[in-house]
Picture (cartoon, rainbow, N blue to C red):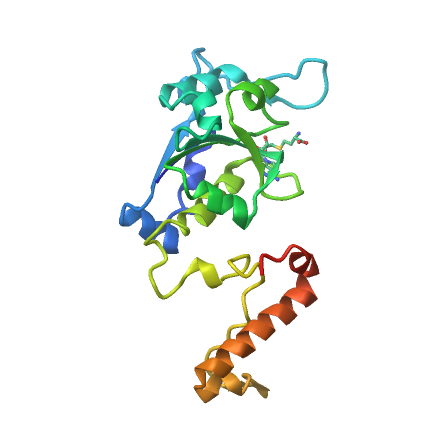
Length: 237
Ligand code: SAH
């Protein structure tokens, strides 16, 4: 699966995508990550990517031309075919105004072969990019970041670990928070069995697999009830 990130800060991604599972997934070629420097798609001497907003007001807005030039140079299937699901490709604009990025959205995106992500900056991006270039807008949460780069890194991480083979057999995404049961993960403990007087639940040490399974199911349900009761209402069971 190929991720392509369009940004005015290409160096930003040195680091966040170079560790742990994402690094191993890249090294084993389960995923490929390409970074496109938006300034390379400008035509003026100053490599201008932004301009003042029509109608006045504070700040700057990313101009449409370099973004269209950049994404069009990638030779994707047409927006119409992408949006009809006829091509396993998507162009995503990271935006606080987008659809909320959840595990369900990550799972849906994991079925694609190519994801192009546009990172906004400043006051945002000329609306024609959302209207006519990107297939969808995605938000990582109800807060405003200063740029789409962190959001893009989050999407890469969450989607990459869902690719077949990336997690390996011992860790499956099915049992995790927001997985098949629609619950949070069960509490995990490791050694020592007693730490500063706090003991690990007895049943986890006993070696009775059936009892462990029951305890985990109940504990996951209890923790979900306590922390995220909203998940139980829409529980996938
Ligand atoms: N003026 C805009 C915010 C611009 S923030 C508004 O109020 O809606 C600048 C850029 O950061 C955005 O274009 C987007 O690419 C990115 N960004 C900010 N918050 C984000 C979020 N919650 N999810 C995804 N991208 C976000």
